[in-house]
Image (cartoon, rainbow, N blue to C red):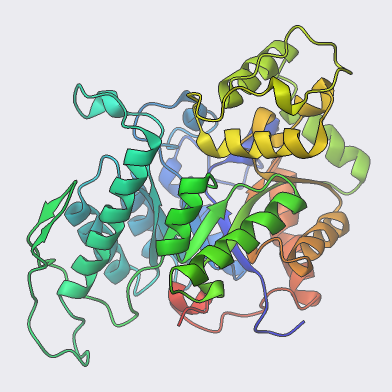
Length: 424
């Protein structure tokens, strides 16, 4: 495996591994001290030489984010700025909502984080699925409108980053207004923060619906992809590469990084026990409700062994909570005619449509290698599950094991996020 084709690995700061309800080791910071808790995770990710840590966000109150960590909803830019002063190499990716955040504010915040971290900042642009009630009386816009707004938002942010050149850059002119007047935003500029010598912060995107793919192919440097199985990953990555080329970009300009929700233990039996315990709270009724919410399909009247077929699917444009999850489930049903019992254990139903891998360190390394070599991804964003032991095995054994197989770096080769992602 050549060094040019190695994995990119990010680490999600969402404490998914606390869902196992196992007590934390005494030496670790408590989630009740969220700043120390998250900084400790960032330091561990940096010692493992990961590309970046990734902070998810929710605009409104989300009880699921508060479970296990009192600081689950801390403002990403503020939290990552604190991490920047405690780390030296790890990239710091903050989530920002293009639906509710003015582009000038987002550009200024991320460029400021870029300076504080010495070139390690990135932004994950999301369109948000809820939260309108906190920003006025208007209802949530349609997904199509939110993505049109996201495209304009990203264009304005990048133009603002270019509007005030970095000190010592070849562009010796002064800061210039951008004088943007568009469908959603009017922004004069220029940005009041100079550009950084490391180059512009990378732009991430999350979403795998058709309109999300077009957005990713046109603007994203990396996508936090939803790929519940290898076939979905292969199809998504190939599709994004085709779209990027059609839009005048290089095929490998968009790095596909699915979430990897893994359960690690010394034996396969212990790993599967962790997986069962993490999902034990999901009764059949809750899974049926989740399926109905995801795709608008009610299978409560069917037997567990009954097949779910294409003709049972609701119309494609029926209102759903997440178009990404709906599209993934629709493709799975159309391709497989699954039994009800198989459908109710799908990641899109019991989780967040992430790739799930369960077993020993060697098992999960083999799974990662198979996906990578099949062209299903360019790397992944780590989501440890089950227990703090699964988290410990990831840092202590799985990442070094990937390096031993030539799939990941042993040492950092650069100091900025753009260098970690091998961006031109």
